Length: 432
Image (cartoon, rainbow, N blue to C red; front, side, top):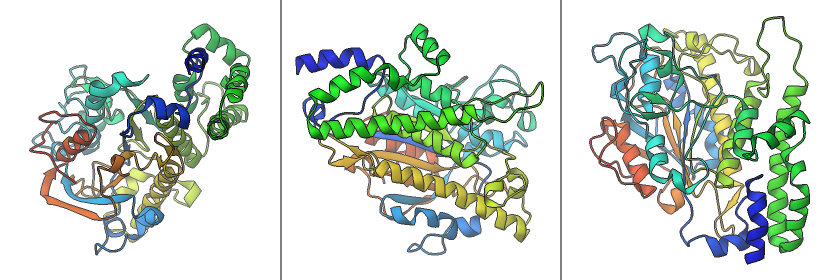
């Protein structure tokens, strides 16, 4: 065992490995590692098709989640009151994004005097982040901004950043899958990483001899798990490289993306896969992913929706716009369902007796209920995962009317063995 650990020490600086069954028996406690994630959807939803008329059946917009009906709960009556104007006038999109994980009212400013609050993910990162290589992982499909004037006089920092380290410092998300991958799986040696990038070689090529040597020292169960992991890493890297290789020529002066696919669906999948790998390798246990920023005007030609999302959300009762909005809701639900599936398909625990979904808690939803009304009560929220046995998914949870969303966060932190008295506007712990 000592020689094996020494052998792995050199490899660990180059590539993060999943926990092997035999190693886990010696290094893990009986209690499974828990992960916590937040996945954000923008602009509200078509409430007619997102919220079910009864508690037994899923509404049409959430039908993609049907195969996982025993792995998630729908949460009702949770609100984000600090996203309301509260005397500050227009700017619901900026406030919804800024207050969703903080429960704090964003100071209305387009300058540098930002003020909101620490977000739940960063609170968790502060408490347990020292146990992993990265305290937290922030991903997005939009390049973040820290300054500029955006929604109705609010700084763009509020609208483009979901995570906040403290009341004035955002934790910017990585929107480029290539850079996110490099951050997690690079060697940590800048000279070596630059050499690899210049030669366009795979991270795995640099460690293939070590990997082959390790495989010789492993039992059949460990060999299988290592091979499965190396294959999944390689597949993601190849997809990123393919995206870079086949970029079309762009007009002079335009910014050519590197590592960001033309397909929005593939873009989302890349980011979700990276999030899964980060959890699988225990590089971090806290993650956020903004599938779309608030106020997003993205269109969805892949599903036949050519109108802009933000415009469609202001449907004014127009059935054609509402139908298009419902298609977008289904699109996001499909990709979240796929993420749940890969978590559920990834073995976890000391002997691989559980899976990542069983040991995770992932909140999916947004800070606006109906984009046409810009309301922030009874938000569209799904809580997926079993939290290492601390959650009982598979049903609808009704909180008291207008319960602060931050009450839920206190409960989730408690299940991560993190005890704090308050987050933002919380009024007590919501136990689910």
